[in-house]
View 1 (spheres, helix red, strand yellow):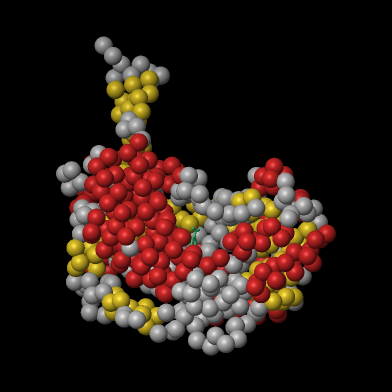
View 2 (cartoon, helix red, strand yellow):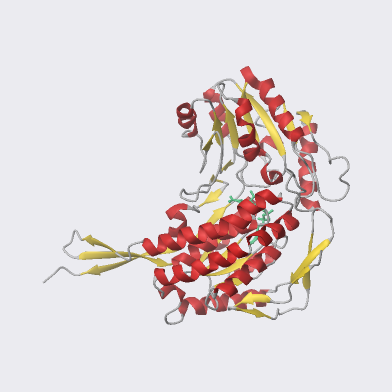
Length: 484
Ligand code: NAD
């Protein structure tokens, strides 16, 4: 397989020479071999990208002043170009971060164009202005305007879908964007830039400069940025919130989680297994909203522990590019070390390991960790409280619904969650009492029509739904005088 190498950045609608000659090599977490490279960005490259985005927004007849229907047309071409590259996008993501290919085809290949079409249509359909008869005699004209230049910083775990949670509404609203992908997943971001170029996005509307934490910090504090949209760890989110607080800069933060699946005593366990996989071990445990705490009623505790143990044992571990693979490697050696550290902590604190806990036999190359289940522990265990970001579950017993909710809500985080029962109405009643931004019943999926995001240390602001578009708009009022 030949390496995917880029030598330039997509800035201001063209492929531009980087400021430095250094490069970043992307390593496969499966083979531990290099698979591609991109230029290493410097703050100078970020500055050029921000200047281009600023010009594209501020110039007369700039992107923000286009009619939404005109933007809709260009964005439709962007969606088509993304679709044409969907299979390659999925392959690149899978090769870079270990996401099983069937999932990458769905999330990473499929979702971006869906979001572009959804938001550009929504913006085109929105009334340009709302006329409100005033209380004081005149009329108020209220409209939504694009917020300006957006600095978007994204992580490596679901890189394209997360990118488009930001890009799709931002571009549809009329904002221009500087995107900073994580260093682990750059090859998909550059392919996306090729799609933007092929679609004829006007120069400067979208600029892509990958890099690490320092470049991210430079971008979010840049004086020419109007809004920050960030997805990543809670620690980075706090640092970014401090910066944005000082600058009085609007910011959306999608951060970490430690969500709970509440299994009610009437759950049909056998019928739930496939969906339970989808909320526990999906993407090798590297999704922010995963339910890594499974709360089980004492009356069915051993049955649920056994069910999850069997599920974990049944998952095919291996090359993420193989369509049969359910569990690929973790993104990096560092991430595996972190996850193994938590497994050791779980054992040290006395939890009972029912399966996993090690590296899979026969897979000596690649950053693999077995799907792991811990039982006989409570919600105070370190592994029940901290986000692990790997395939490791805590199965925690409860007595009744009230205790289940108390445990689910006893968390620093509040991003996702789920409730499982044969009685949908009962489950929905319990779900309404879970303190988090989103909760699923007998499954979990981020439907584009509804807001997604967290409370407490899981962040602030929402993506998806009309709320996701509003996050890139500010409200503008014109007061017309009373008639006569
Ligand atoms: P991370 O916070 O280390 O990095 C995320 C991105 O932020 C990267 O692009 C990184 O370069 C950049 N970054 C890091 N520190 C920064 C700083 N101080 N200023 C500006 N940019 C900075 O996170 P990660 O380990 O790459 O990703 C995993 C984390 O992301 C997990 O905690 C996970 O829960 C979270 N996540 C949240 C969501 C969500 O929607 N809530 C989705 C996916 C991942």
